[in-house]
Length: 151
Image 1 (cartoon, rainbow, N blue to C red):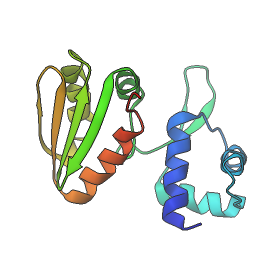
Image 2 (cartoon, helix red, strand yellow; image 1 turned 90 degrees about the vertical axis):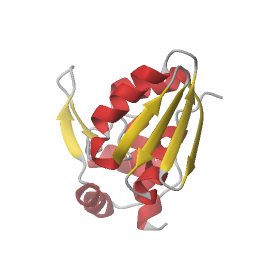
Image 3 (tube, one colour; image 1 turned 90 degrees about the horizontal axis):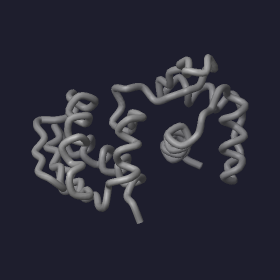
């Protein structure tokens, strides 16, 4: 498996699961049919600049750095999980279609969290249009938000 693919999978796992140590991450990847060594995971953690943070319960877990377009803050994840209907992107723009009334709250958090990647954000009652600084970041945001589309 290519490093980039594996690291994308690691980011996906961290968005959905609480991983407290490297062994748990190795096991989570094994559960998905990916065999890796702890040394490989250690390098991935360093390259991805993963952060170990303390939860409200006092336990530590890995999370993606906030400066990454693939990092989705918990509050935004909750909002997206219940209200994101469709995501699309074109060049440096990402369009999020939401349930009526939720776009403004989503846009507010996106502006706060992804300021370094955005030129501006436009919103109405059920749509958020992100104007990103470049195509690469638009695509990364698109991929991250796509995992929250309500089926």
